[in-house]
Picture (cartoon, rainbow, N blue to C red):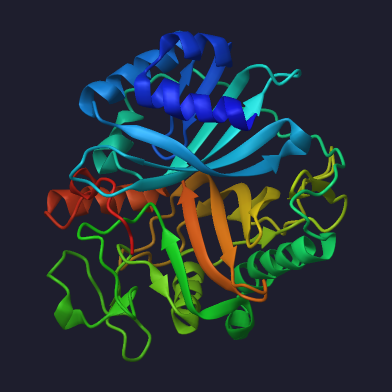
Length: 381
């Protein structure tokens, strides 16, 4: 599978090689850009998409950097990086590849990456025809031997840590857990929000109002000493994560996550967690919910977490009034740990945008405050 994914990135995407595409892609392959919510079905449509991208970015190259097993060995996560032009920094993302029964062809590709098409890219979904069908949520849970010499207890410790992050910190709002969960210099990057100059700061998400340019609808932050949360910056530090949690639960007060605790299986190279067939995720679902599809290891100190859910904007979001919009979203997070796997040092969030994100991104582009059309491929830090 890894060899096929390498060919996909190096030959199909980088070189637009039609022969390789016909050989490794299933005739009815489904390619979904989860950021822009645009789908392509069939080898012909995928190649047309690749040729359009290469026409705009002739020097584009993409390569896989890390892999993680998924769905009982029938799928694989692939972290990747690439370059569109010599004048732009690297971009990053995570794809989920699914294969046919005999692992000879790629049947589905779900793409989660920094949104280098920008606010303009989000508008493309309004013009695109939904060609793909919703995939089945059933997951095979076949037990396999661990690789790379990792004991189950070591991987399980990271899995349990991630469960506490999603279940207790995000869902139950236990801010006091921040010091237990996160390293002092933890960095949380929401790749929907990419800053134009690629710079960060020690207190990134929360800065003095005097340092910010005027912007319509901006209101003071409610926390003492913090003027306003700028979503274009990543969040840094334990206190930063506490403020992030406060703002998240203010915008989505019924935000709920529960990771299933039963029927877990070890997958090749790590853990694969899935909901038991016929059973709903263990969620107290109200107006917002999110469930974990699976967790996989990709190296000695990292986990990839796939999820999907819905959220309703019932509170202030980035200084905007409650929208009451319902957004269906999905994503894959890359969670990195320190050397002894005791604390989280980095969270990279690759997700589809909320309705509120699309609204604000459009405003920022309109007012010249670094719309995604200008932000393409810029590093967060």
